[in-house]
Length: 469
Image: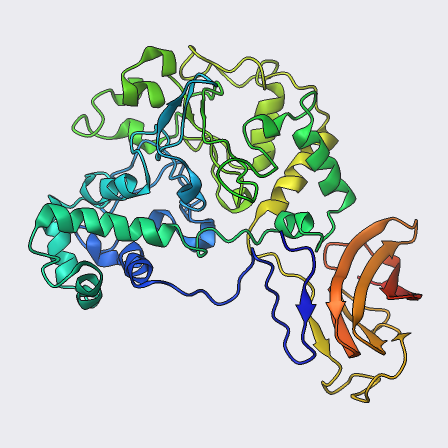
């Protein structure tokens, strides 16, 4: 894992091993991207894989006003909330773990697809989703697409001759794209924290401790916050299946659909993994989702029952003591890891604060050479070490901190509140000699006096700044 990062005097590109430099796709991955975002691959046209697994929503459904996803046909709904497609490339093929004595891996909430390729085959032909009549219909659409030449480049000049093989290859290409860094970014604040490049706030750190504590939140029992067998980074899921005792969602529009689509009507019961396997011992169990990007993927649970993360944590905390209603499936309910955790409201808020650090796209403070108009020190080459007064000061939300380095060295630039508590770390790595400017965004902080400290080799200096909102 990268612990240090280099800044060029003229270039401000961060490459953390996890974050986002420019993406480069192989031909099959590029093909998969075309397929993933192609809204012409439904009948009628208008819905793509991305419609229910969109980047803006952590590759889940961007429509937060429905508990489940609507298909291309108006008033047709699936019976479940669309899970995120991000990080699902790390899920192992569905299997029975002899040691843990439980099912692991696979795709969909109920594990009915062994892997990503098998999962990608399903929505195209589902009458509640993309509504294509058969495989040939899908393959013909791909053959007539603007990227058909790329399909033949990847799979050969006869790629469309065999419908079944071509359909399988469509799914394989989508799976290849879903395995790229576009869906698996590892660029959350928590990732930078693990790489010693960001500092969690006091509340976020408290939330992490509660999250990991088996006598408190115990979230890590199913959502490990450390690296595991499938990745060198934490995936925030163990890919197992569990019945949390979630009540039925009576607002699920699937329940009111015609008998043609929902023979059970309002009496429909979702048995999850048990229904997929035909095994009552697995009834009510659903795949443990990753908590990566969880803040941008509401609503929550397989049936979209909860609208906020606070509701979810409250349910985990007080399922057995509050008025939540009976579980939809009463058998196989997890009685060990949730239900009566005894968390205070402040502790619930702390756990939620930690989960907010799991969203990809966290931006580290920018660092640039002092060369823009308005820089008070200017562009003169630095011959000594110096820490300058931030500007503007006092400031509202954002300010710039400028410092000089006489030579290349390891640098830390940290912010403290008036009580001496560490607020955040802006820089932690090697910088070249010269004058540097760091932007500090204090939008999340309260008005008051703060201090910033520069450590560069043997040089150390502190200055005071005032945040006024």
